[in-house]
Structures are given as structure tokens and as C-alpha cells.
Amino acid sequence: MFNVLFVCTGNICRSPTAEAVFRARVAAAGLAARIGTGSAGIGDWHVGEAPDPRTRDAASARGYDLSRLRARQVRTADFEDFDLLLAMDHGHERALRRLAPPARLARVGLFLDYAPGAGPREVPDPYYGGADGFALVLDLVEAGVAGLLKSIRDRV
Image (cartoon, rainbow, N blue to C red; front, top):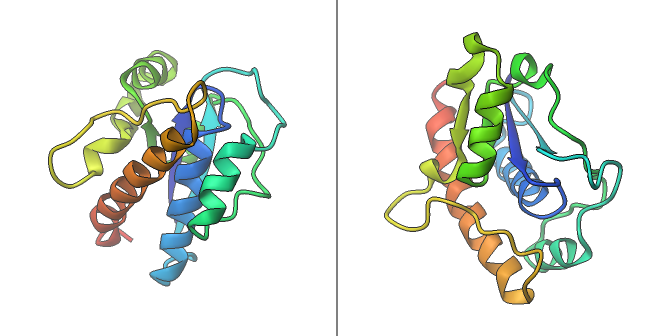
């Protein structure tokens, strides 16, 4: 099993979106038995909470279900349990690198490094903005997931 963890600030907007989109695409590709996923936040502000309602609404409009997801914080065991820990922005990537055991640093990366073509390298935080920010997150996540799945398909 190849496992991918998506990481953002509080695990209520960007990373649960990436988890849900990735899970749906993995299932559609018939790889659910070989690729696992999860999401977590750097901070503990929202532990146990469902994703932000605006995140759920935007995802639902595109056919993604986030209803079962609950926020959690990154834990030390994640560096063993997941083959890739992908940060939504450079700040998250730096935080993950500080938390990672030295032998597991290679598992940490920036999510949009998998997005094909030129464009933003970070998924912006939509939390303090309007609905268009959540739509942009989905656009970027869908692009990143497509590249990520293509990248790991040959490894599983």
C-alpha cells in the first residue's frame, strides 16, 4: 500500500479537499486497494471538526464527499505510516521538515510540485475569503492530484 498524507494549517479547507479529490480519483482508477490517503493539519485548532462548510459545499458541487472527514493534527507516526507527506504551502512544508525524523525527510514535499505546467506553487488558504477562493482551491487540487496520481501509478 502506498499512502499519501495531505497537510495544511488546520485540516479544514485545503488538505481535506485534497484527500477527498485524491480518494475519488484513486477509486476511479481502480487503485483503492493499492493507494491510501489521509489529511492532517500543522495546528490543533480544529481537531475533531468537520471540514469548513464552504469547503464541503464547493467540493460537493463538483461531486466530492467530505462528510466523513474530521480534522486531526500531524503526528510523529505519520512519517512512518505515509510514503509522501505533501504540504499545501511552503510554510507547511517547513513545519513538516522540522517535525520529520532525519531519515524521513525525503517523504516531505510540496503538493503543487505535482501539478503539470507553470502556475502557483502553493494552494492559497481560502478561509478568510469568499466562494471563489474555495473554487480556486479545487482547481489547483484537481490539477495536483492528476499529476500526483500519474507520478505514483507506476510505483504501485
